[in-house]
Image (cartoon, rainbow, N blue to C red; front, side, top):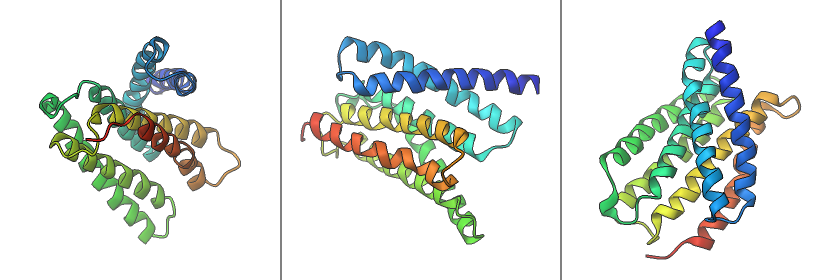
Length: 210
């Protein structure tokens, strides 16, 4: 338990830092020096929280930690990598590995969600939603990597989608852990409902049609 508590404290601390930095980054003008500087701190603090969630979910079995850890890791890593993807020729093996890994987890999440619903557990909706969103992003990765994106600057639009997606996971984790009012399913999905419109707004603002 000492190891679990030690990892838990680091996970909570890095998660809180990410939560606060994310608010500033969302409000700050996109692309300026402050945005980039705080974005780096956000990336590493959030990645630390995501990585630590895996041993935590093993030491104290918890589907919540695991699904958030997988989803957040994918969003962060592909979001950072996407800034280097100016052309299809910039796509490397690591990009395919990240995408294929998330595809497999997405299938597992959707399957497990259906299994839960069949057994009358409404929490399966959460797995279905996160699994479906993951597969949707994977599908877009496949299109981007094969030169079939609707956007010429697909790297930038992907960066916007994935970084806000990682913040959705952060807010979701915070809300679910501290929620004492909302039904569990609503607590899980509320950040997605509230923040996805920001993804749509900024992708429309900054995209360049192919």
